[in-house]
Amino acid sequence: MELTFREAQAEDLEHLVGMLADDILGSQREDASSPLNPVYLSAFQAIQSDANNSLVLAENEGQVMGMLQLTYIPSLTLKGSWRCLVEGVRIHSAYRGLGCGEKLFEYAIDSAKRKGCAMIQLTSDKLRPDAIRFYEKLGFTASHQGMKMKL
Amino acid sequence: MELTFREAQAEDLEHLVGMLADDILGSQREDASSPLNPVYLSAFQAIQSDANNSLVLAENEGQVMGMLQLTYIPSLTLKGSWRCLVEGVRIHSAYRGLGCGEKLFEYAIDSAKRKGCAMIQLTSDKLRPDAIRFYEKLGFTASHQGMKMKL
Image (tube, rainbow over all chains, first blue to last red; front, top):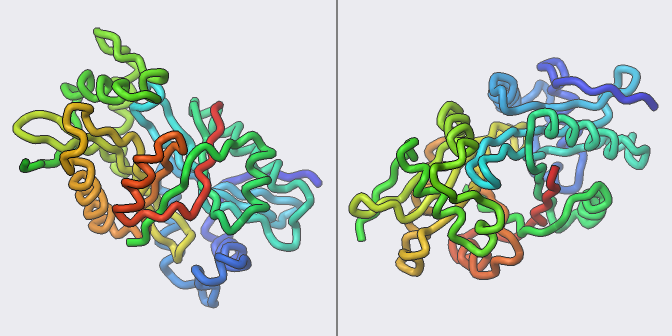
């Protein structure tokens, strides 16, 4: 399997929303109806027009197998370092367990390094113990509580 | 105590870096030497020139008592919602326990709501149990692991 990586395009959106919704937590949160709910297009345009946001797709033979979003954040902390935040990670359910997630994260980590980030970080729902183990295997440390408040 | 809130300016930087360094974890990470290490000015300029980043100060009678950084993040998840990430929270050591942190967070939460965010989120080091209790009292839930990798 030879993965390639590219920025998401508007034409990918319906597939991506389907991937986000095809998940025990995502199915309660997303709207995978067709035609696509226009809120997703607005969100995509906001991501695409922000130089510090990148929606990365992993592809094999023209098939999107994985996705994640990178946000590059300038900050005063850690001696004025940039951080890279990872959100919206999903591997297509048909392609799990094939090492696609590892390769997508290798690409994400390389991207963060190329941007000069001192840290890459994410939060993982405590209801996803397998995901947390996956991130620990990659080298992430669960040193922090990930705290959320719905508004 | 009548707090006011404003965006940080370059003139605040030396004071802000002093606040970041005046902390059990920050003292190991920051460089509070004078004249100011120029990496902080570069970081500040990157924050200031990014419309989706805001370095907020809480002031009382011309004295900066607290700081935090807000990053507004467009995303596909949660039906194409914006999220607000909080980083670099610090209350000046001379002004802790006076309710300044609560008021600074009320302002941050209001700012996130005005921007239309569906979620406000942060990570808090597990070595800071008091901070975690503070965030829980504000209404944050430690539903996630906060996972980091130094690059």
